Length: 358
Ligand SMILES: Nc1ncnc2c1ncn2[C@@H]1O[C@H](COP(=O)(O)OP(=O)(O)OP(=O)(O)O)[C@@H](O)[C@H]1O
Image 1 (tube, rainbow, N blue to C red):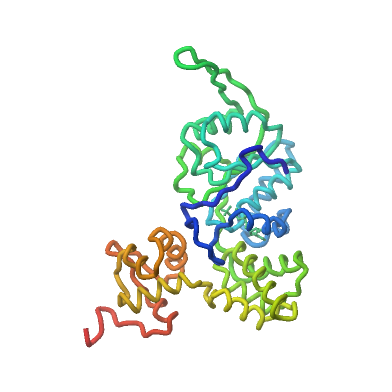
Image 2 (cartoon, rainbow, N blue to C red; image 1 turned 180 degrees about the vertical axis):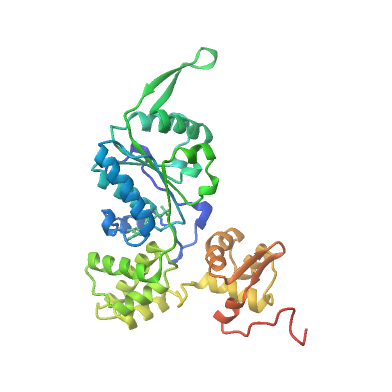
């Protein structure tokens, strides 16, 4: 793999998961985490667990392109963080036997940055653009033309005397990744011949991810421990692998090195990840909503003050999972606790419309 000079960073998607909160069950990854992840990435399509539909479709696209001896259509991968978009981009390049160049929407400040990247591509290479929905508009416009006509217009000179010299590019494939497909303007979306949406993984798929990762890390993992970790991983391989590494730490320091069920349970208790994959902040939000505010509705800012966090952290780190799990609802008047939230805290679900004593 060859990275694109200054553009090889893959910053977190702060729009989706918040920045500073250090949580084991946050779906995004920072730089040190990415290094740990690299060792666990599947390298080929047949090692990539789950996502059967996307995998089958992609396999056809790649096989057909290889058969024709041409670069495949551009590929757009969408879905929440940590589900394997970057991994798939790397696999696409590997399956095509070509190299991967890596950049991201926020890393490209000016159209000229993108022009430089594009004009340095070699025939058949794959250009991975992470967080493509965060490309600046002029860069986006340059990208349409490059993707469609394999051409960039290099602007020479300034002001009224400026002129555009068309520079043709060898065929290449863009793989765009986005957590927000809806934010992509239609003209850009239309340039992708194939769009794959990645969904959260089922527990049995995460168990397979964990068994594979344990093999690579060379740690003995029991099937019931894998099931336990998988069930607390929020449908996300990145979180599953992260919890696996923490259970491995526990087993090494406090256990006998073997990752069995008691070790998994004890480790996840230390890290405050409960049976449903909720961490301390998630539970604090539920607790405040149910016990302090009687189930709501309560405004985001008030809720955030109650749990001692920034509103943005509550909204971007805790809330998406709580809403997805059906624990919390968002209404125009604020956040409300849904029945499973009360049950999760071991509290009685209040009757609709209040109790007899209201
Ligand atoms: N299908 C899979 N099979 C095995 N491991 C996987 C799979 N999908 C993801 N992983 C693992 O999960 C981790 C995160 O994957 P990846 O970086 O590809 O996610 P992403 O969707 O690109 O996330 P982001 O949007 O934050 O960049 C990697 O370590 C990868 O090995």
